[in-house]
Length: 242
Image 1 (spheres, helix red, strand yellow):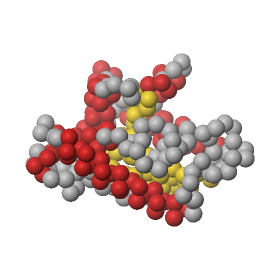
Image 2 (tube, one colour):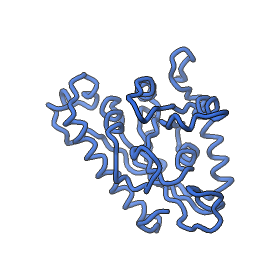
Image 3 (cartoon, rainbow, N blue to C red):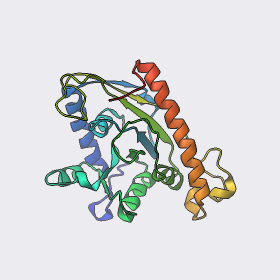
């Protein structure tokens, strides 16, 4: 069944995201040496959220290229400038205003999950240490509201400075590890009275509370931090990323 939406729906194109995936894999393998671990853990069908740490500018394109399914990333609107605007839109990516409640972006992101697609999120909100230390509640909202499992993804780049094209990028032809973790549900362990019934899609009943989202965010942070620590051990990366 083809889930690609018609242009009038306002939803991002899954076909476009698949094209973006092919472009991404070509660029990433051409410029760096990705090592992908655990991609099989991404559910083969149905809605899913990839929660990606963010320490390099290539994190999004890297995951988009090596993920086993097309991914629609929520990307800050500041990136949609000049020719990048129609390009990013054409490959199924979602523009979001990080400084306000962007209802259009929220609706489209939920639409991706409702149609059984994969949503990509940088839960730290912006590029930084990439250690999942500071999470925004948006990830919990989409997971609970969309009834989608979260797949933690750790992108670990080279710590070498020699050979970098620019700050924020790993050196050319250096190894970049992408480690996919086991999917988990954000609302597991959250009281059913706070989510409106305890079912996986109970968050959609309109009876969500701030407490439920706070507890879900806390659970998510622990899961993501644990995955990152495990990914570092698995790949032999140091605890400090540059």
